[in-house]
Image (cartoon, rainbow, N blue to C red; front, side, top):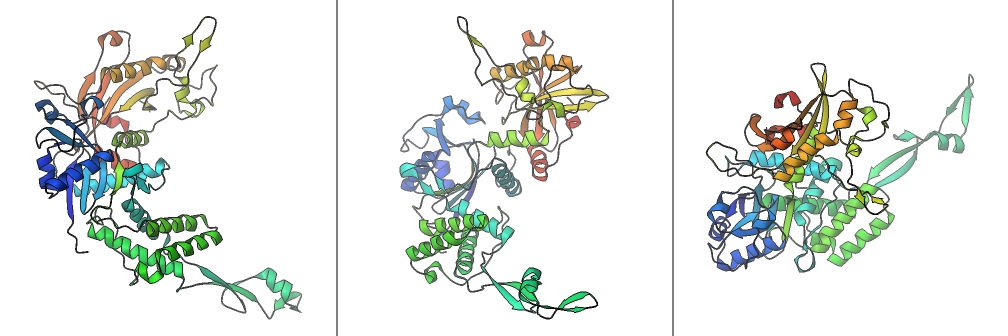
Amino acid sequence: MDIKICSRYVREQQRYTKNQLRSLFAYDDVGIEKFIKSLKSYGVLKTVANTAEQKELTDLVDEDVRVMDETAGNDDCYYVFTYVGVITIGNRVIKVYPKYILSESEPLARMKQVVKVLERYSHSEEQIINLFNGDGDNRSFNVLAVILYLLNDYYEYGVYNNTEDILEVNGEGDILWNRTIDDGFAIIEEGRPYYTKLITHRSVEDEMDYFKRLHECILTESSKQLHDAGLEELFEIETISLSDESLEDFGEKEYILERIMKELNVQFNTHRQILLKTLYTYVSQDRKMLEENQGISMFGTTAFYAVWEKACSAVFGNKLGVAIGQLQMKKPLAAGYNKKTKLIDLVEKPKWCGNGFIHEPKDTLIPDLITINEYNGQDWFIIFDAKYYLIQLEKGRTLRGNPGVGDVVKQYMYQLAYSKFLADHHITVVKNCFLLPTENKEIINKGKAKLDMLSELGLEDIQIRLIPADLLFDCYLSRKKMAIEKLEL
C-alpha cells in the first residue's frame, strides 16, 4: 500500500487544542476540520471551553460539554476523546489509551492488555460484531471490527472447508458396521462372523473449493490491511499469507455475493453460516480500512467505566446475583428467608402511597458489588463501588476527580438496606469502599469519604482504595480473584 499511514496515541479525557491535533495527525487546515467533525459525529470526541480549570480536569461531565462549530479558532476550545480503543479514519490510526495511564505517551504493553480486556468484556456482555458505526448520513462500515473477527476466527477454527464423504470397500477410513452387516454376508467360523467386504467411510477436503479459496484470499487481504495500519502488534495477531489471488479473480462483486448466498442456503452449520455472512458483508461493502474519505472504523468503547465495573465485579467476587441460600456464611439462613432470593432482591423498593393504594416501582438502589468473606472466624460484609475516576485528594491541593455527594450517600444507604439481613445473621463487620484505578504497582490507601450525620447512625464511612489497573486486569483476563485482605480495609 503506497498510502502513508499516520498512527498516533492519544489519552482518554485529556484536553487537546486544535493545533495539537493538527500537528499530531499531520493535517492541513481543511483536513483537521473534517477530522474533528467526523469524530464528533460518531460521539468519540467532545468539545469543552478553553479555561484554566478545564485544562486541569481528568474527567468529563455532561455540563462541561459545549456545542461549538468545528471552525472555531485554534484556541477557543479543547477537544476531548471520550473513548478507549482504536479508531481508523482515512489513513489516520488513533490509539486512545485509558486516562489512568499518566507516565507514558505510547503505552504499547498496556494497550495490548486493554485490547484483551475489551475483547473479554465484549464476549461477556454477549455483544455481537459491530458491523456499522453511526446511523443515517454518518453510517459507516466498521471494517476494522470485521477484519479482527475474521482473523481471530481463523486462528480458532481454520479455513472454511467443504468435505466430500466417500464410501469404500475395505478402505482406510472408519468401518460402517451397520452398512457392512446390511449389505454384505458373513463367514461363520467357530461361532464368530467374519466379513470379507468392510464398508468404510472417509472425508476428503476439496482443496480447490471456491469458498475455501475466497476465505483464504480475504484473510490474506485482511492481514495485510492490519499490517499496513501497524496494528498487528497491538492486537497480537501474526501476519498470514494464504493466497496469491485477489477478489477480482473470483468474479464480479455481484457474482461473488450470489455464490455466497447459494452456499448459505445449503449450509446448516451455525459457525459456517456466521462466517459466510461476515464474508458477504466484507465483499458487499467493498472498502478498505485506510483509504481516504472512507468513513471510520472502531474497536473500543465510549463507556470504559462499565469495563472497569465489570472487571472489579469479577475479580472481587460479586455476590449480588447469588441466591442467599448459596452464600457461605457462618450462620445458617435465618427463618423467614427464601433461600432462592438473591442478595440484590433484599434492597427495599420505594413505595408511592396514594389514597387507599400503594405503587411499588421495579427500580431501586443497586450496589456495584457486594461480597461476603470470612476473616478471623467472622463474616465480613463488604460493599464496593467501582468508580472510574482519577481522584486528587492531597493536602494543600484542590479536591478533584472525586465521586459526588450522591455516590457517598448511596454507599451509606446500601449498608442501611441490608441492616436487617446483617442482624439476622449476626454479621457485625461491615466495610464500605470506593475502588478507583491507578497505574501504580501497589494498592494505595487514599483515605475515606464521610458524612458525620450518617456516621453517627453507626454506618461505616466509605474507604478509598486505588487499585493497580494492570494487576486487576491481569486477574480479570486470567479469571482469578484478588485477595480482599490486600485492601487492608
